[in-house]
Length: 204
Image (cartoon, rainbow, N blue to C red; front, side):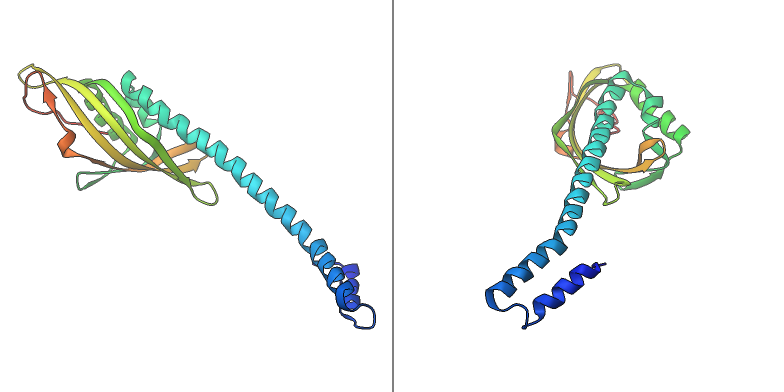
């Protein structure tokens, strides 16, 4: 709300009996500066606060992103499950799976036990975006995954897959949790070696 002295000043500026011409324009400009300066300071403060929030949230999301790589090489299905919410949804290969934490752990353990990770590396840096209130975020990942496994005949094989996926996070009292992940891969990048044989199953 504009205070009374500013109202009085504005009335005096508009009065032809008090000011005229260049003096009136100068006085009007000064009035605009007086009124808008607090608003400008407030806007700058909000922008700086948002930048601080975004930097903190980005640091947290990237820390989780880097932790996922260690989790894969450590084959820690429980640590992997700690990253997801109770309402986790996985989308891949035309399927939508609503997974409980226990189901997620069991699925991950089967996968981790069946392969050895040679690479689980970003091809490009992840893209992260946040909602205005910093309660939701999504991350776009482009990753190369190279695994070694044995087929049913006991032959040692290697398989390289180029993945792209989107992960949706929600901020909770326990930090950021993954609510959903949608995964795709390029079939033409799948290859087996030593010797060619049945391909293994991959789960991003």
